[in-house]
Length: 97
Image 1 (cartoon, rainbow, N blue to C red):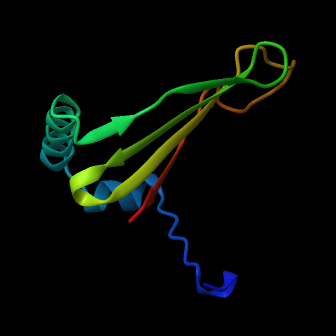
Image 2 (image 1 turned 30 degrees about the vertical axis):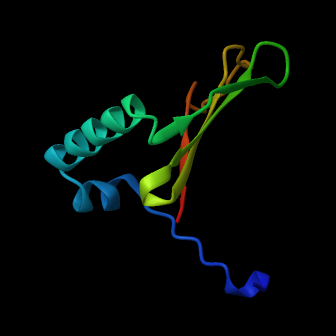
Image 3 (image 1 turned 180 degrees about the vertical axis):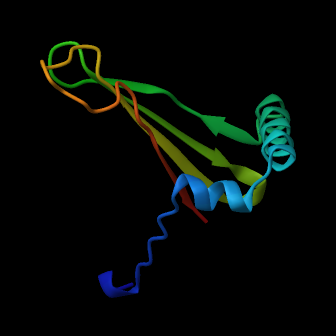
């Protein structure tokens, strides 16, 4: 595969909310918890210290029966610089199938 063949879709919060309602989200969470219980879904949690007290949480998971890999990354900024207006915590979700 060439780099030019890779497609990345970025969705805003509003776009996601227009595609998934509360029932869909609850159903997906229930399916994921059931898959965890039967070992059909594997997950890890890695905490990487960055600078001083700030960390990056990396949480990869693999849903075996669906052949889906996903990952959440969430930097957490415990120590802030004066005047810093960024959120203390923000996350990104990735999915590959």
